Image (cartoon, rainbow, N blue to C red; front, side):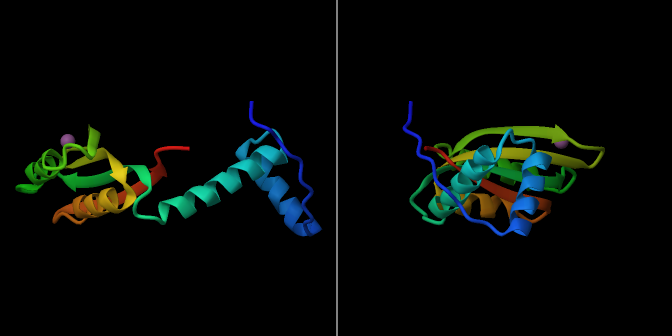
Length: 136
Ligand code: NI
């Protein structure tokens, strides 16, 4: 088990009460859990700022499948980046629209570029690239 250290933190009363509201809203059992998550998120954001960090990206795209060529382009992009593409999921949202979630793994710089290429394909209505670090 990892060694744990106790630290004391001084906060203004108002800031602390706002934080306590957040802790309760999010369902944390105590402040320590919430503070640990905040610190981890901040450190992770720092790591993701470096292009060589190993990461996983979830790329969300919504598009009209009647749009000529777009589905083929999406598939072609994934096939030409086989090592970076882990998996994809397709959901038929309605008569026209499809949601595709594509999981990519690799260096932040590479998968961000690939994710941006996917999202910026002509005909994509909504797109987003979400990154998370792949290792502790
Ligand atoms: Ni579909």
